[in-house]
Length: 241
Image (cartoon, rainbow, N blue to C red):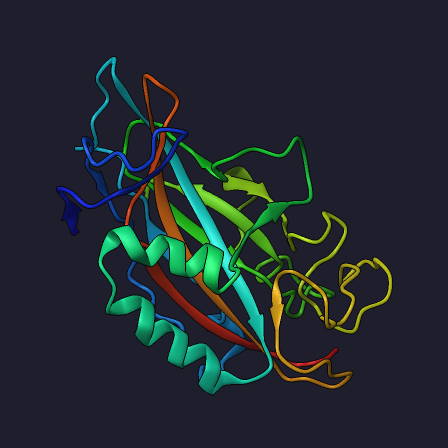
């Protein structure tokens, strides 16, 4: 688990603040890539990095934010990852969010929180499945974000945080091509030009590629927010339903 001792990006009226360190999230024992074909394996998993972060009165670890981007060109997606991987922490977060426009993943249920995964003062595992699969017969592979103390491979109602939704609206899911909510799928308009979470050519057929990163977030006593280097969670391919 890499610990960044300096060079963290902090947003404030006073400029950059590098006085606090944040640890990046780490792999949760599951690697997913856009080439993965088994639908039961098309999910993201990582472990938060909450212990070891400064919890003094002058600095608080807030939690973990999740960022994503939708593409129609896998080579562009991979090329951007290569750029981010070769940047220092102070530059990687800016490149991810400001230059490449990665957006925060939202939840359908409840009030909107930021960061998405709130701190619990202990490292935890996060499981994210964007797509529904075989949900007409089982909830095992329904779209979900859940948090637990051990690695997860399928849906668990006791660990559910909520249902993942796009940044353009909490009624917009990732089962692209579904026009309305049903028992098996959620409303998921096709990504289109102008959507802030989309880069590529508007297509009615797909496929689409979704890239995801996790970022640790903390705040100092002045309200300045610090971000860790982005942790790459993987990418998945989504075909039209």
